[in-house]
Length: 404
Ligand code: ARG
Image 1: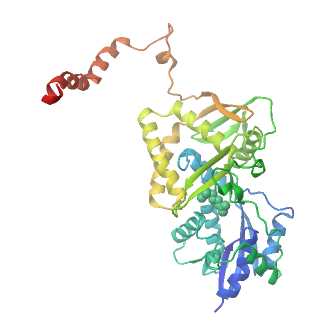
Image 2 (image 1 turned 90 degrees about the horizontal axis):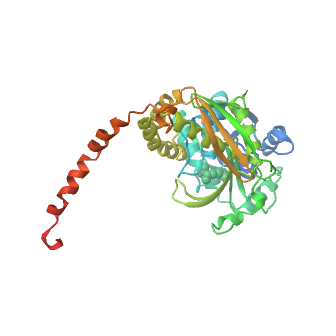
Image 3 (image 1 turned 180 degrees about the vertical axis):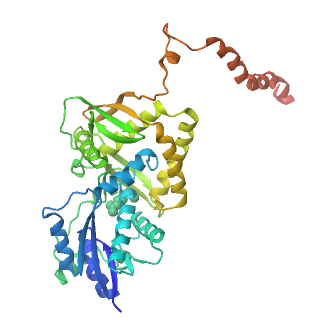
């Protein structure tokens, strides 16, 4: 019996082959869904990509523009959570998967499909994100993963495509595996699979150094959300795009790391995330100014957990949702502006201000306007150290005989 399958389609070799493979092996009618998350698109644009899906045999090919949704509902929450997996990686691919899943499920409903499919292999995190995400949103749908089943090498895939007349834009030699969206770009495979090899300059596109004159950018935040650059109001998507361009032109935003995938593999990853890393610096700095100490410290403890959940494919999960509620409450006060300075290869914070800053100059200053009650400190410090002082005085008595 023919079943309808909604396939997450990228236009690349694997998902093009997957269209035909699903037809042959699952007697499927394939609806190809390409989601625009801000990735660079081929010369012919989205229409060329649609046509390739149809040429491969899809009954329908749909392109969905999810850029605003990704920026507002995924990148912004990640920023509010100061999210960096293993303290470094701002979750680029992990943020786009749940938005893609949402559209796959939506298209499955529209087209009466019984399954969704993706082109991920069995070795990565993205399969986890697609499948766990789909099960959370639509437990009734099956999930198919052709590339995990077919066991084709890259060359065999190309032969398969040629045999079925699937038009391709690839060569047998592929240098890198790339995944890209508004929040950055992940680059894997090829010579950088050896963690000792320095990534060749040609892996980088978003952070090719072009600018030389130092400059500053003022990023405005309202309740944690970045809303302006140098006083110009921008949507999250436009603001991220602009920062990718400007910050990237200084060659800032590169990461080179070995990370722990959910499936137990350590992998060498290179990333370019100019806007994400600059915004994370600015946002965290504004929190230094506006969050009360205990809230700030507790939030810092929860942030790695948030990043881990999202990395592990648990965007749609009860713990993630509960952490979001906590984070949302903290962000009510994160309003103000941050000055970022850019110099070749560098981006850092050089100033911050807020109408509801908790920095009180008259408490902090050493000059004549000081209002701090110095006499309060003496008793406070004595009580603070009282326990330790009592313990220290007993040390002599507590030491065992042979140690005296
Ligand atoms: N290691 C990163 C992650 O798991 C990047 C994955 C990139 N995906 C890809 N298909 N190249 O989030």
